[in-house]
Image 1: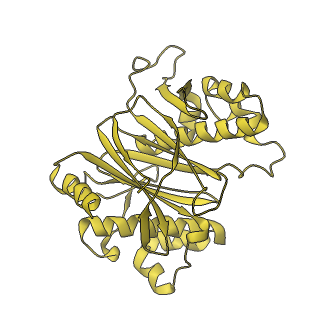
Image 2: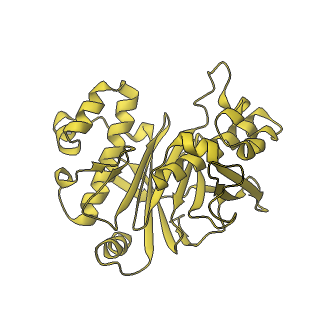
Length: 292
């Protein structure tokens, strides 16, 4: 409750430290919606999208809306039916009358992730196994999917498992920045160069990025002066499920930020959890609350 009050106070009055809450839900913890809940959570446009989706995609789509709207309703002290989104030209959902409330949603075959914050944010989650059945998985040709500078990290990895892990990490970092800036993945794949730096901790990286303009040397700011910061985590090894199944990355506007991590279980319940950090910017993140 203290965390909700801190986030609510920042959103409503602009007072206190910036706070972000990240909610992780494994697909096994999704409860199927009743018809009455579909009507309550989804607006008409969302219901139309839901009906066109395959069952597995529809499940993740609904769960993301269910989670984010329940959190927002609690923060604003309104009913879930009162939480309705507007969309940017690129399809980014937002709340038009709550300029201090920011959120981002992502889902993949193994998890759904929601990030709600008092500053601009973006989040992405990707399964490590999602390309395992492809004839030629993308981590074998990373230069086709990301900036050549980023692709070098994947190409330099020794084993296929490490190539896949690095590709997934870099892809989620890129996607989270796209969601933060309301840009496009096509633009980011051409212009956003991500560098990794050994952090001195096993399987953990420092990360930085620079976005270039249209010309060869037309980067619009000096390298190292990021307009965003990143954190990345391993997910999936929760509740005794063992090995890492996915990677979660979040991007946020540079600020002093307190990050709270939760696992979403048993329908509406959520409990404090710990995710394994694997990458971060030279961060202004002042506190990560976990292991409680």
